[in-house]
Image (tube, rainbow, N blue to C red; front, side):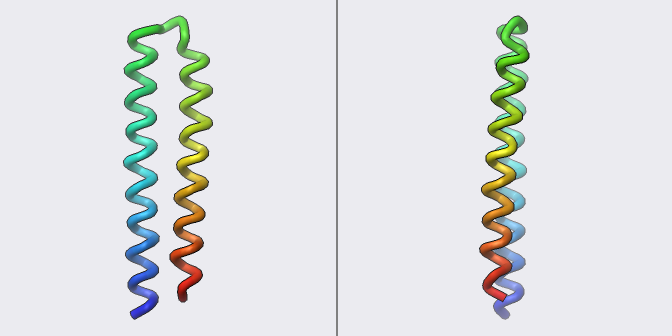
Length: 68
C-alpha cells in the first residue's frame, strides 16, 4: 500500500514538473516573439527556471520514494 502511494506521489511530481516547464517554455516563446532582440537573455532565464523546476521535481520524487 505504501509503495503505491509513493508511486502516486512521484507521478504527481513529474506531472507538475511537466506543466511547469511547459508554462516556462510557452511564456519564453511569447517573450521572444514580442522582443526578438532579447532572445538570448530570455533563453538564459528560461533554462535556469527549467533547471530549478526539474530540481524541485527530483526532490519531490526522492521524498515520495523514501516512504518505501
